[in-house]
Length: 306
Image (cartoon, rainbow, N blue to C red; front, side, top):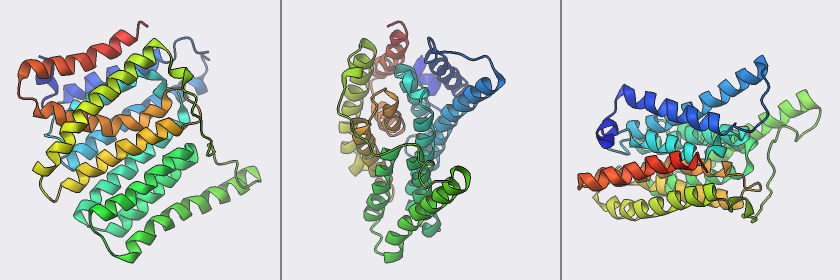
């Protein structure tokens, strides 16, 4: 059965996820102009590797910080989300931005150990700063650093200042590079703080079904996720709460995104995959777990034909 395959971490799981991600990447480019040049091919290979590396980073975060029970459902779900809304693989800036946000999330959650917190806080802010260069609204994840400090009850003043130093470092480096390379101050910034509330692009069968799946399954799993927080070890609770706040921030980003192409949903995939995985692992009835996971698998493949 499908749940027995991903119930434990196995090498075959990463192979399956690799091909699902590849399918999402290729189908997203159907109908797009293709240039059979070396530069185009290498660019597409690079973008695909960023997609897959993002999944590997999610797996590292989950396994390193025990956010699930050592299953691989989170990487399966991430790849299926990519397949359901394959437009997430076409926006280069958001792909890069999300990758750096995942690196920041890794450092934020690792604050739990309070080993070298100064370095972790600087790194988290630095990665978020780089992500912001590619997509402005990813800057909202900067708030997650201070949420983490509150959850870990860190009262040291310097720890609240260090994130600003990290952001300022990125800003200074970006301005310097822009002046040296382009002769101006701001051309290095690839995204501006525009906002749009025009959701007409979502008025298609693919988006309606995909977003309904994401939000219905995500909301249902989140209710159990919140309920289960009291049962977690006290030292681990902040990490699980950070994931929950990451989902809320990602949802706000999707609402504010200036271009509603579907790519903006990418920020939701990692934390949502973790939350749904936690719910799947709590399902006692084997038949229900099979149906739940099978639905999440079948729907994205059906969407390929719409």
